[in-house]
Image (cartoon, rainbow, N blue to C red; front, top):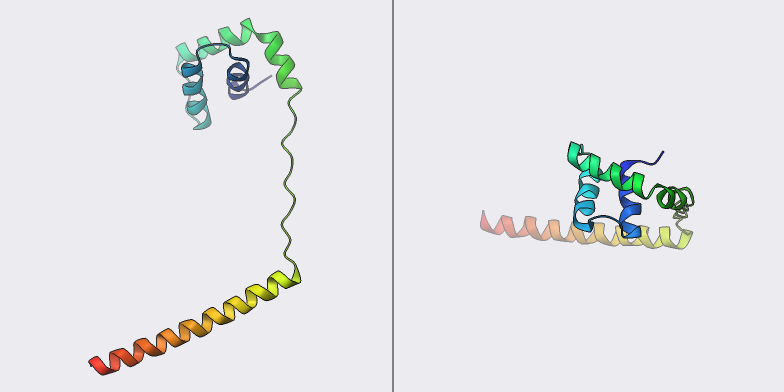
Length: 106
């Protein structure tokens, strides 16, 4: 059995029903809102009317590909370590300048 969101997606993809109303239903379903009875009836009417086409399409949906894990090379890690060291030195220099500036003002 398809979820209401799957059915809305397929109806939009197939171009059946009122696009504006279906987009509104989609937003509400994605946000976790419950559909009004009239909207639910409208959706069920369309699903029943185009059941054969919707079922055929949803059953053959390709699963989303799993992204490759990101791995860091040794060079990348070394470059990041160097950048962190440079930033630490810059922070130390700025802190010294701030301390020196405040000593003059006191």
